[in-house]
Image (tube, rainbow, N blue to C red; front, top):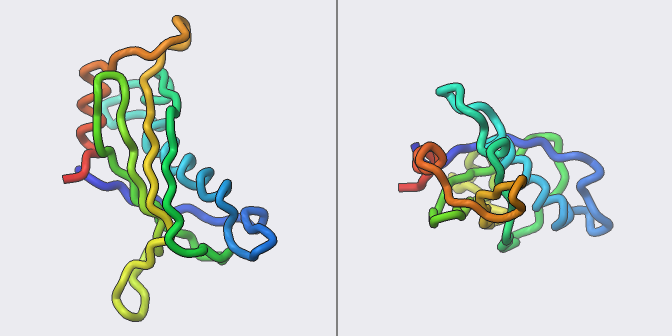
Length: 142
C-alpha cells in the first residue's frame, strides 16, 4: 500500500505572532494524521492500533519552510518506516495537496515519530503482535 495522504485543515488559532503556523501546531497536525491512520477501525473489523496500546517515544521534526495560514487544506503524507520488536517509526511530509505552478509539490515539514506498543495494565512496553505487524506492513513505504 505504501504512503497514505490525508487532507487537514488549518485553524486561525494555529498561527503565531510571526503569522505562520506555530511549531507546536505542526506537531499537532502530525498527531492528527497519525490518529486518523492508526485510530480508526481496520478494514477487517479488528480493533484500531490506538485501542490496543500505543505511546509516542520520540519526535523528530525538520522545518523546511514556514507554513502560512490559509483556508485551503494541507496534505500530510504518512507511512511506516522502520518496524522493530516493540516499536515502529511513522514518517511524514507536510506539503501542498497539489503541485504549484512550476509542477512541484511544496514541502513544509519532514518528520518522524517513534511509537511503542504499550500494555497500559502492566505499565510497560510490549511486543508487536502478528496482526499489528501485518497492518504496519500495509503502510510501509516501498
